Image (cartoon, rainbow, N blue to C red):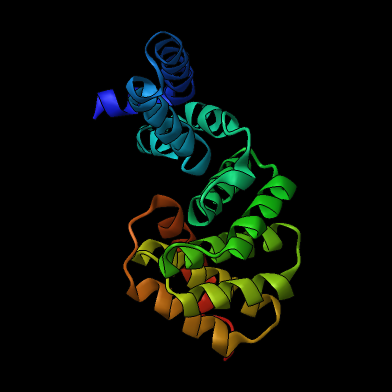
Length: 216
């Protein structure tokens, strides 16, 4: 696996070496002996432009090394040449990293590009829509935020933590709109999922202190 990752990382440089080898063999021995290095060059270049290095990001994301993940993303020089589902993932990851850096405009721009291209899985699309909803709420655009979050729930979210986060966001929106019955309903749904993420657990405890005292 490590060897494969090295090949992906240095795919362009290896392709150039095989191209040089192919040209040299072609000059001294003819085209057919040079066919194999030419073929390897084409395969490597195809992979470089069509698939990119996104496979390398997984290890960095799992270890929480966002700086290294961003470096891999920035190494993609021609994102428009990427295979469409991979291009969608590319823009979604750029959006996630921008959001972590609190670059909300950059996050929204890239996530929209990813959604417009179509996500490989419905759950991934739901997660991106949820993030778009949270971005809208950061900008105090509650109407757009609610729309995105409801779409996220309809598309499906990957786990109970994301589902609970979505219901809590809707609960907050409903309270702002003074639709207290709906707020309580979304709160019950979030609590019933029994999330374990500390931030979500903290939100549930905070809301629980006063939601029983509001009408509806």
